[in-house]
Amino acid sequence: MKRTITRNGETFEYDFGGWATRNNVKCSDGRTILQNAFEENDGMIVPLVWNHQHNEAYNVLGHALLENRKEGVYSYCSFNDTEQGQNAKLLVEHKDVSALSIYANQLRQNSRREVSHGMIREVSLVLAGANPQARIDDIITHGDDEDGYGADIFTANDCELSHADENSEKKENSEMADEKKAPEKEETVQDVFDTLTEKQKTVVYALIGQALENGQADEDEDDEEEKPVKHNVFDTDTQNEEDVLSHSEMMAVITDAKRYGTMKESALQHGIENIDLMFPEAKAQPTGISWIERDMGWVSTVLNGVHHTPFSRVKSLFANITEDEARARGYIKGRFKKEEVFSLLKRATTPQTIYKKQRLDRDDVIDITDFDVVGMIKAEMRKMLDEELARAILIGDGRLASDDDKISEEHIRPIAFDDDFYTIKVNVQVAANADDQDKAKAFIKSIIKARKNYKGSGSPTLYCTEDVVTDCLLLEDSNGRFIYETVDKLAQTIRVSKIVTVPVMEGVKGANGGDLLGVFVNLNDYNVGADRGGAVSLFDDFDIDYNQMKYLIETRCSGALIKPYSAMAIEMTVAQG
Image 1 (cartoon, rainbow, N blue to C red):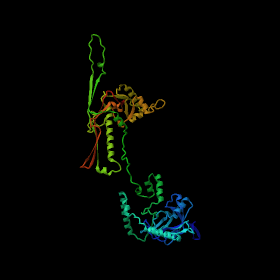
Image 2: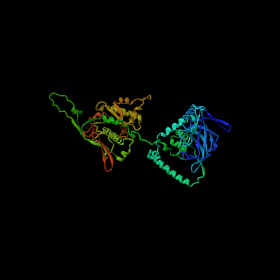
Image 3: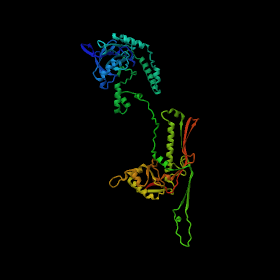
Image 4: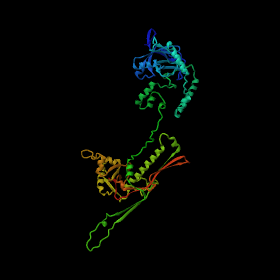
């Protein structure tokens, strides 16, 4: 049941009454409302909303009749019959919500932040208001009282006095019980300040310095001079700065962020600076740094495919029985039997140390707490050592012979540039005006024709660049259909077990100066030898003088083909003119 009040001959029904704002009380935002500051609102009806949210219709709970009094602005509030309105009504009746707040604009205030004029645009139910005396003090209840009415008066220190005679004894007992309870310890300003991060504390220091400068400037002004406030404010418990961001503005920023691209650009359009302070601190991914690297899939294929021996000095001995002098002979009675003649071939390959070294300042290792920087560095060192060794096996390291860091081709013999006795050089010649299709066709034909010279073990693998594979897959027949629909079909045609693309092979020149297109080999015919202790090992040390952590990964090994004619290096030359 609603109560009624008559104003200017009109009857107004309301569910509860309360102070929308009280005069001469300093609010949490530092402002003080002076008497009759909102006298123009006397008799006006404004929306009653929830927590100053007015971006959606369902946030409107009802309306409020404003009455200007000498103590402040009193409001008679009525709930709508909507689900939200009735839910809010129950919250008020049960005293779950007891604070009111206003949204006002067109404010005028002096240098002491005393508001002398303004227009109230809405009254809001809030969990806690900026004005400590803006509270509900008149609630229509539906209890056992004969007239269904009870009144509670809230003062600044939130003491509660009952005006319902039938319940006075119960409330008095309740108050006595409350007095016996030990008061809860409240957080001090220092307690709250200690919870801030160092960056947030820096911002607070800057704001305090700015406030002191503004305060000094205000002392030089006429205290009685009034000047217009150029922004809208409302009495919520979170507004402590001159620049106020209302809930509706925040929703507008979020909505417009899609249009402007970022929250920051949207905020600038709404006149909000330093919105970055609202964003959380950036954090590194738990996995640490993500490497920008070449495709490494081929590396494991190479290192896992080679033959390994537990010794690093490898001697290869071969007897050439392909010459006519080594052929078996027919015997004629009474003639001299000739001895077989063949030549012996040999070569020895000795080891070389391949290493990678890294260092970190110990201070950095301690300060980096987002991820394991030492583990990351060690993983990077092993990854790059493996790639360098695989590169040296296939095509060499590419450094000049005069470079101190060169991996010698006498110790790790590159397949593409090995002696003709071990690696067959296949030269693909094309005309000067040949296009990509012509080059791809010539490449495939040359491999198929040269396949008869291959004497390696089992089925070989083709190591080549991505461009070579792409040009081959784009070959079309006379009807415009792709000849090789998959890489497996291309591999079957050129009689290899698989095709592996090697990014570091791009741009490499062959032994005859042409573009190196691929290496055709079964890596089981390539031996990598390492003595005991020469396998991949990781060492770390600490430099006391420079406070540095130092890391070294190295291996000492040799590598070479151990079977004649066990590989083919395919390169392309373009005819002049």
